[in-house]
Length: 593
Image (cartoon, rainbow, N blue to C red; front, side, top):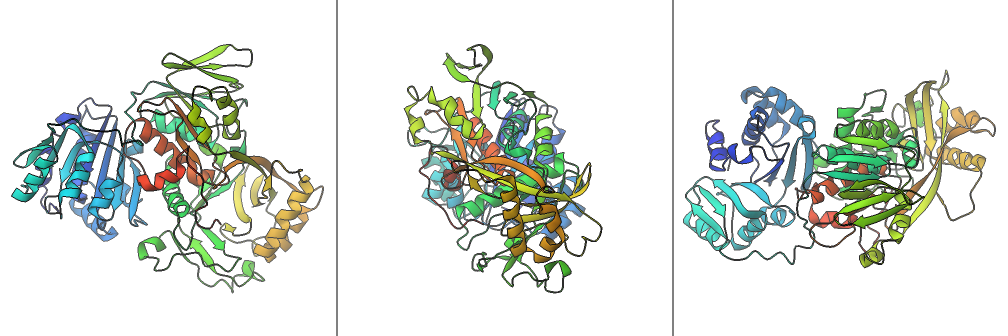
């Protein structure tokens, strides 16, 4: 249902009861069954201009094919809202079939653009809309209307152009009271929810404790604070980002696989969110840079799925020949990918930015020894048994220390036995300062494949490079620091021989410097996210096991957790989110890189 005239756009919103219906509501959820750019801009403008607007506005819009950038440029000239279109256009890339979460208006307006066929997209939703904007011209049948009804709560208002008699009959059969171009979901029967095992009831924003102040915990804290929660973040260390998130610089880069595995699709969703957040919160060139990343497939495996569409090439594509580049001399002749949507980021700076958001309080030197449920509140106790915090919700984001806190709860929460085991992996990143003459030997952007090299990161001491890192099971005898640095140099000699020759003196014993830490991983190398209690109102949650992809996964996991806690639209399809479910049966999906 494309609405070419500006005058018809507000009329449809009015039939949906907007903006009066959302007045003074903390959150409002709109389901638009056919994305229309002008209509979305009208919704955005109406929300922005309303003094009684909801604190958070969700728009979930379905489309078989999203508008191209050219249509956005046209809208920029004709809509009267060029700034809004510019903000949207900055994120308008790589819109493959599936869900795409775009954070707009400082994260207070969330557009989830769902690309694909109508009925499958409706079945992947896990929320109940407050307003539905119906495309009456779509090929509705009994099953797609039933899928739509599943996305509605009792009282949901539905607005459309005049539905056909056949569609009006289908809507009536599925519980809608149809009155011309407007309808309300008001079934005469009791709505059964016993099979909706993944849905939770919305928790009213109140107090929440997040245990762990790394990427996982800080991202959850910021996501909840954006929704009106008061969040305390507790960590045993005196300062945040003291664990694996103290890595001086890391890469946010999508994973690719020939079968476009769940890990690949989840990583793309996570990278999209992370690049938006870095652009919003960090200083480009100092704390991060949208540098792109070259990935050399040293196993000879090209990686990209067959028939990789043009939209996907905006994210990852085959790299052009690099034989003439001096820094590439001697490198193996292997397939390579160029990840245009990739960056290097200083994790600690991102953690600090998240913890500085309104509504978030960091509490250092605060090791939680025990968790105890008392009535409707959780108590956090120190090692002496003293209660130092009482909150409504708890999120465990403390990596492999989470099972220790859960041990005392296993008797009353037997479902914790379903939690997959977590493992620690040690790693060392080698580092040094760039020297005069390094320019010809070092690439102008990060390169990974066997370990990796980030060639130029500003630090207080000067421009630094980082190489590695190693990966060693924590239950094995630890290698010495010198051995770790030697392994990183060996990898670099295979990946980028010219860079290895230039940087070799910095790897010598006595000269080698770097960073060492421990990463928490699950058996299938995917994070654990979600409630640890059964029932519609869980109060104990986890977001952990980011492994070596914390920059790619942490914000996606935070958005998914916050969405489930608030009964909001999910940032990815339900079928894809199942691979992150905290109490899943781990399976290895696709190839890792």
